[in-house]
Image (tube, rainbow, N blue to C red; front, side, top):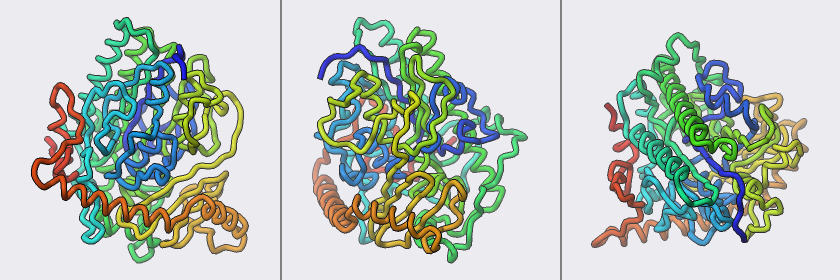
Length: 500
């Protein structure tokens, strides 16, 4: 590996932002002028998928370019092993200065994973506290119906506190880079926690949607006994099975879109600062999210499913001298970001990779080429009796696992995934091809056995650590601000509803 004078790279990541929330993806009413401008300056990937519709595993997969099952990222309390290289490691080895401001949901004693500097602590526990006990199904990580019923306008939330600190530290870091004698290019990740539930926004962002005709969900909720088994399980688990009245749903949806506009405002802040510091022309901008959000579609909220609202994410990449206003329709993955960054940094042959990865560089697509149109995703643990997998190949989406009936959708003809074709004769060939691909790719029984072992180990370690003086794996910043966030010993909802 060698030093490299490649372009700067700024990654801006939202949390739980559905692709369908943005005008670049067909939304007709959302207020996102800065993200719109970024799309006009770069390439929008219209069919991008996370590798696991849940924060921690999705981010670990994105950073390593590998499927969650390969790196044992089974749930929100699974450790990312230090020996697995991330894009921060690879770029740092190529001569980049690397930094993270905001959330990355690292679990384990290593809270850096290749980042030279962390500008904030993480927002969630760094240890095994959130590991679920399968015997009792206790959960400290689950959102529940209060996220919908208690939504609306706020003056401040702890998540706003976090994002404001993330932005302030990221901006200061860019000032420091501009005045520094360090001539290395930078790769900085600014990772914000909005528009993650609970659904709150401040008055100015609420007011952006005054008089705006925000539609109700395109696919209304079915009665609970008519839902497919996986959806039924998720709805009951998250206290969504009784549904919500229209006023409550609309209040939540309006607050969510207000939070989307809040994220857009932060994108504008960063873009303006890059311009002011004369850094914009030589900086790659990558905007994305870790997973999507149902926002009432099909009666579901939050994530943890493979339907489009949760599994599809926005991805916009603007490169110096690259195409403007380009739209790519091939199916791609967040796992593609690692090889894409290496490619942009000058390693077009990806010679620096030390192990096989599942991602592929997106640079050829940006430059007008084509590739196999396929993306893979997984859901594991979280109380499920067995893993479940997704293949999005061309126009087809397969949802498949040993514990639930197969689902097959033609997204060209059925974008809202309302007609399961798995049992229809006309789709038999497509089903057989995709099932054979899934069976060749995944060994569900072996994965589940390793999940059970991982959970048992983590619960034992957690119990041992609770005896006597507990070690702290939470990243500690010089400011000591991490005590304000949802750290070890905190249940998510007990913390997240600290609202003014």
